[in-house]
Image (cartoon, rainbow, N blue to C red; front, side, top):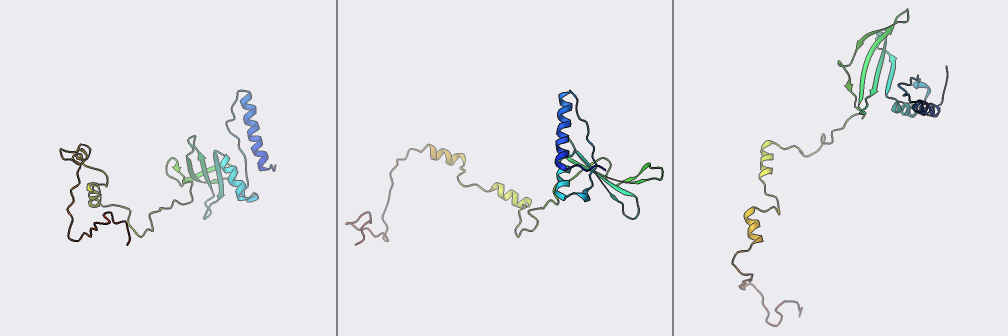
Length: 183
C-alpha cells in the first residue's frame, strides 16, 4: 500500500491537470482511496471538499452487507447523495441489494441542521388575513393623498398671514414681548 501526504496529492492533481492541458487533453477522473481512520478529520474534510464525488463505505447493519454513501457535486455546485446496500460474493462479484434513497438523486443539505430563527420567539411574526388587510389599509406617515399633496404644493387664494388672538391664559408682558428676560 502506498502512502502519500495530502499536500503531495494536491500537487499531483494540479500537475496532471497542467500536463494534460498543455497536450490538449483533459483529465476526466482521478480516483484515489483514502482511509479516513488514518487521517485527521480536517484532512479528510479538505480532500472531500476538493473531490467532485466521494464514496464512503461502511459495514451494514444487521448483517446486510455494506453500505455505500455516494456524494457527488454537480457542475452547478449542488450536492447530490445516494445510498446503496451491497454485498461481495465468494467469487468477488458485487451484488447491489437495494437503494435506500428515492429514485434518482436527492439534494443533500450542506449545513448540519437548518435552524428556523422564528421557532422559539415570544411574539408572532406571521400575519393573519384580517391583520394583513388592516395593515394594507393603514396610511403611512408622510405619504399624502393626491388632494392633500396638491393643496400643499399649490396654495389657494388665501394669503400667508398668521392670525393670532391672545387668550386669557396668555401671560403677555409689554416690557418683554418675546419672553427672553428672566427678571
